[in-house]
Image (cartoon, rainbow, N blue to C red):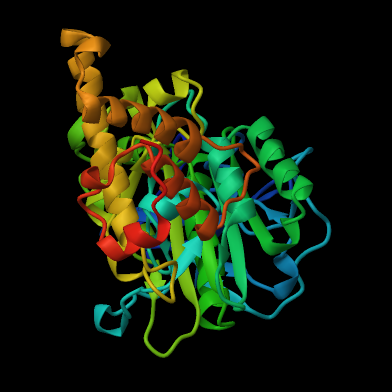
Length: 463
């Protein structure tokens, strides 16, 4: 039986404060009816013996202690899920919207399937180690930091870098190398309308929109919706992965907007701040999102996550990327200097890593020489950067034969291997073929990380 309150004690921003007079539960959904026949939805975000704090999903403008009736539903927030969702766009509450007008569509999802957006915790014992790859069509990712089904692999970007373009490319090109069902769930967090239209136009242009479910939270939406939308997206992913046996890739952009909303809400609740004003529980809150990724024993489907975040002031030690890096299985970092050189995508490869890659590549998975080639590419590129530093001291004429080889190698590595068009889709074979082509700038004696049998089979030296 629902409980009705008719007296609001205080309203601060999106928060409504009530005197606690019944056994409410954390996360419970409330309905707020006003005299003008409008109904708002809220959620309990804090409670103690004296107070109940409700965060309102919509605007609190016009609410007062005189005109509002608060109904406690004794239920949690649930999202409707259906196979009809593919190709459609939804708001933070899981309702279909028109992206150009931002208006809720009149056609609701017709389904009896509803799921709690907080999901179920995956027992670590029930997890299965991920060993199958996802091909993104981006050489740096596929060749050097291969994405694995069930992995959480974040991309650390910064303002002005092409992370939106990269997200759209991955969303439209990613695929599994088997015949199993593979779908994309795209989640825009606190993005502007122009960005949302850009993403959907790209999905339509490349003919993949029918394989994508989009959830969009706009920058001018209430902050509580920014905190809800990744959970709505992941709840949808869990249904398709663990109940419909599909492989799901979830792209979350931009997790920095999520963290800023978390900080704003924490400040409104007058909680004690931690590093840079973020709440002390930012780690556990991020983990409640990132850890909903994985592969479960006995289930055919998987959930893979690519959270994308912009590092404030390009600071990789900032709490947002720092916390994310602790939870996830690797990281991909974008470089401002490479972006300024016109290289796309501008990955800073020596700061990037995929911790699950080693057990998922090789014969019968990608190619037998993949691990050796990847290791050699990174080692030689590191040596190339050292040679570039040396040039500033001795000049290019002071380089020896092997150092000049490394110089040619590094330039081709950036221009041919790293650099590709935003709509260029390379498979694993293409990526490794390009790798061997640029390794031809080195002598066999410089290929210290590749087994001789692979050198005999693929190496064609230019020197």
